[in-house]
Image (tube, rainbow, N blue to C red; front, top):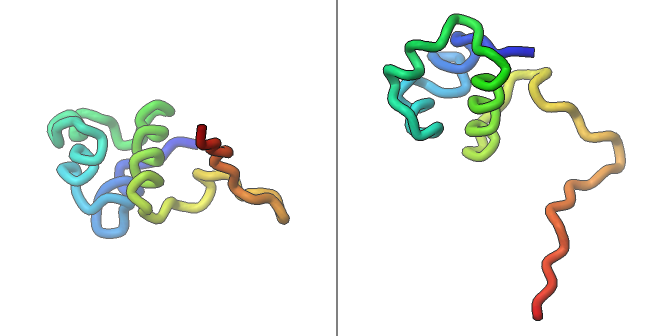
Length: 80
């Protein structure tokens, strides 16, 4: 599933502007403007990844729900 420019950027988008998305990805807003109306798989992954890292809401269907009763495991850290 690929994300559209409208879902990624704008009043109802994950990011409010191409500049904000560009800052999150470490690229320029003009680079964002060169992307098409429907982002490819790599661009979609970049947008969703940046949004998750920044704690932004993601449109339904872009992150698989966890099975009931499962817990997120970051990993065990052992001190030496």
